[in-house]
Length: 360
Image 1 (cartoon, rainbow, N blue to C red):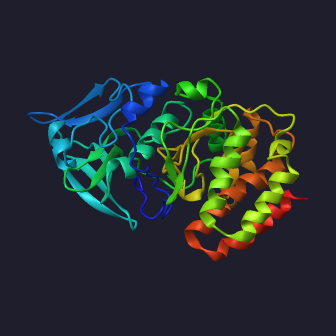
Image 2: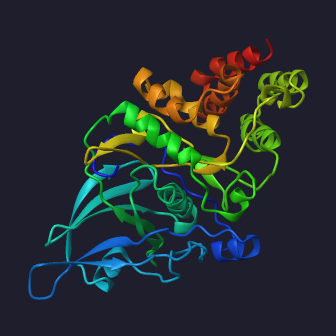
Image 3: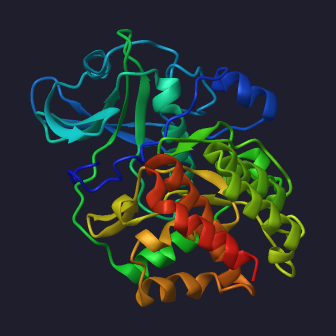
């Protein structure tokens, strides 16, 4: 995705289940995921040449109807026409549920477009909100969201900045950038007040990921992360072993004794396929974003190849808390259970082993 065909996770494009409008959700809660800066939108100039205009706060708030960023229903081509941009496109391939394209204007502007055969509320609203949440931290290069919506023909799409990806980024710089993102003030009222969650549900891969606000991180992770995955699995042994873990750890509380937990902006699915370099800067994409304990970011690190330079950069800003190694097992368990629910028995043994490690 985003300019490097085959680099993105085959199942990591997050989407949310159809729900009441985001305007309603955010109006009631005060949540307002807004661009903190302006988005640059390249326009084909009349009479030749190039004109780039600043669209100040292309969305002042993503508290909007669930079927579109603006409430308007239009196709991808209609959006570009409305913006006065003449484009051609290149098919970049895709997955079983989305197709990816690179759109180019005659004056050199480039856009990444992802389309799907389902509604925007289901496929792209959660991804858009997640990208904006990370973008607003100003900590790491994130593709700017320009528009998302239904096309009026049963499909949907998201349009964002095209990033020409260039392989693996400098690992120390990446570690520092992720740490800065985790330390940045969240762009959402509830998270600023110390609550964990996200304004909308999204997915982790193709699995639903509930995000109801909760002021108690331990309860949030126990019920809306591990408990949710165990319920989806419907396996008696997993259920019994998980119950033993909860009993032994006082509902996981003993794993978090002596540390302070604050909501951080998380990518949520940080593995090697969602990390690259763009213009010499580290960049991350395809998120499953929510506001949570910063350590939860490392649940996919078994599939990320983070080395010594990465951790040196990260730990320069966020030192390791006591008990991290045991909690890391817990956070990995979430993703291994998710892989079991997505891909089957190949991840069952790992899930059981991680639970048993928490019992020691």
